[in-house]
Amino acid sequence: MKGKLHITGLLLIALAITTQTTNAQQNWVKDANNPVMDNNSNTQAWDRWYMNPTVLVVNDTLRMWYNGRKQGEPAQIGHAYSVNGGITWITNTNPVLLAGNIGDWDRAKNPNSILLENDTLKMWYTGSSDDFNVNNSIGYAKRHLNDTAWTLNSLPVLEKGTSGVWDDLGVFGPSVIFDSRDNLYKMWYHGYDVDANTPDGEIGYATSPNGINWVKDTLHNPVIEIGPNGSFYDTWLFPSAVLLMNDTLRMWFTGWDGNSTSPYYKFLEIGYATSIDGVNWVLQNNAQPVLNIGAAGSWDELQVRCGSVIVHHDSLKMFYYGFRGGSGTQIGLAIDTVFNKIGINELQESIALDMVISPNPINDRATIAFYLSKTSNASMVIYNQHGQVVASLLDEKTQTGNHELKYDTSALPAGLYFCVLKSNNSMLTKKFIKM
Image (cartoon, rainbow, N blue to C red; front, side, top):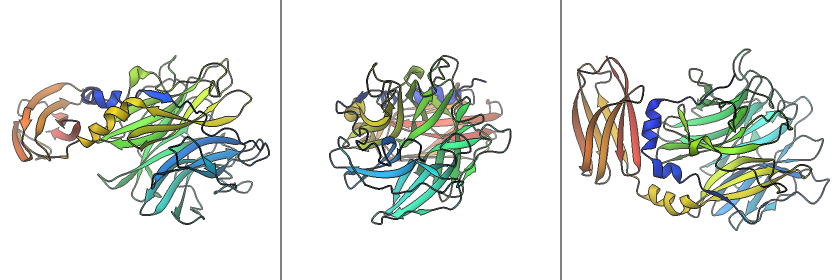
């Protein structure tokens, strides 16, 4: 059954406020040097084909972990680095994470998300006993930045759901961030209930205090469902990269249109969505891809799949892999040209915000205390749970420091409401309940 984004009217309105920031993520230009990692010239190499680039910036060097594979053999994880911004790469001779034994839950391994925390690299990867067709699980590995050996969890840290739920055949492709606002690791992942190459493949959400013990959000999952018939993501989609910028979560995802007249690998393109809370997502760019497949005959004519999005030298860079029939998979680079000019300035102009609503729940009157780290034009708007404006409490130049507003809620019906404070390019949302 075709689905839709899990979305609220509030987000449609609140995210419309940040149009400039959103538009800064829609202008991707493929690099003229693509593919930046071509097929391995050694046809017998373990990494004959390069897939799923997962990239970090470490001391101005770009470091990539990727899925390397040879025809008929399970996928392993390789490492490469670049000192010229991702144009050329030097690869390790051998895998850094080897294939498991036959029957192991992670015999084949696919890197998906890596964080660097206090000189420790933390990796979340997809493991499979049958080369990513069914029964995929998510594993975890870590190592010190200056070491070479990874320590792997012996068991998956996230597994498929129970029989009958939306992800009961497998989970795949986690994208993980650490959110310092609430000290939680947050994961978005692809789940499916038929097999990896058929509908419906959708996006779920889970949280963890330590990156190992994860709890799925069963109340809202899946948080992004497949699109309507005819959309580029009407069969499945998976979260390729998530960044937290300006208190807004930004996701680049790979969508598949399920073209039934073509092999399963055709027509995979990259979309973009934003969210305030990680649960309710708004598809951007008029629900169209932000990176398309290449022209006929090009190296990426049949698919583009996002691997990583990073900020590097005041630019937003996407590393993705593409496919052309008979030539295997290769890795390309795209740069967001508008972010290069606008996005960094927006981040520099962002303002620290804080807001407390008391009491909460509210009977008839509330006090809204808020803080601005810089004098600026500020607004405060109240929305109901359907995204309708019910009150505008502030719209003026406001001084640095602490402020307090009294709000008479006696005329409001009982229910859930959202208070949105905006100042320059920063926005903060707080929920409250009217009794």
